[in-house]
Image 1 (cartoon, one colour):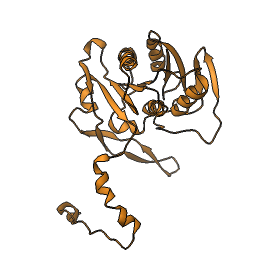
Image 2 (cartoon, rainbow, N blue to C red):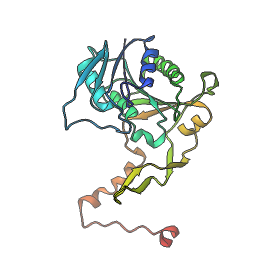
Image 3 (cartoon, rainbow, N blue to C red):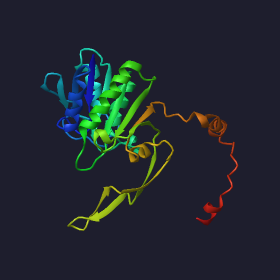
Image 4 (cartoon, rainbow, N blue to C red):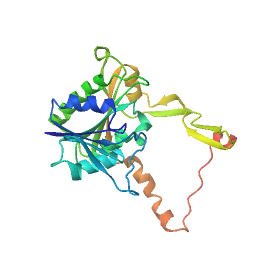
Amino acid sequence: MRILVTNDDGIDSPGLTILADALKAIGEVWVVAPDRERTAVAHAVTLHKPLRLHRLAPRTFSVNGTPVDCVNLALLKVLPKPPAIVVSGINKGVNLGDDVLYSGTVSAAMEGAILGIPSIAVSQEGRETFRFPVAADYAARIVRLVLEQGLPDETLLNVNVPNRALRSIKGVRVTCLSRRRFDNPIIEKLDPHGRKYFWIAGTRVSWSRSQNADHEALEEGRVSVTPIHLDCTNYAVLDHFRAWEPMIQDKSVRAKPRARSASQRKG
């Protein structure tokens, strides 16, 4: 049984090494990961330069590309046969809520799902220090379950592990994605020559979607497991927007303006 392991923190990340070692008890582990850190590259694919694949050890390769590049090369060129599962991580820091839209860790698992392979992304809460063995322990448990039970079509799992000792973990909760709010997300400064530059940063100040949300589970000391589906269609509003079809097609058809709310009028 083959297991593909990748990440976005790079081939030298200790989280990757610890994860791969933990999964060797389950199957034959292949590692194909970026040659350097590729945090927050989302689902980027390299189209503007050639990709180079370097064999570092048996079944271990680095790629001068993104996490999605790594999964594509691994599945289509490197592994002799498709793996039973793709595991991305262990990421240094959580991937909660909106983070999944930017995360290279989650995008690697998403690419695995797109290519028809059961996939999970694993992230470890922390800042300067990380309890990777704890996250690896839970990753191995979830991998065994996925291999036994399978996953629904076009679904991957996003796993976040709290920064606690193994004995202090309060349990596991299946969660939804939360929404986050940031204070001062763009920081503006001046360089020594008086020219402006910007940092995309900010401090998280609040969360929404508190019922069974991923951030809530971590705050309680629980492992968060969020099923993510590839189809982003909002089926609940399809009929509403079908009423727009004639208005889009025929420019002579005009919709009635909506009444402005009191808050909009004040603004």
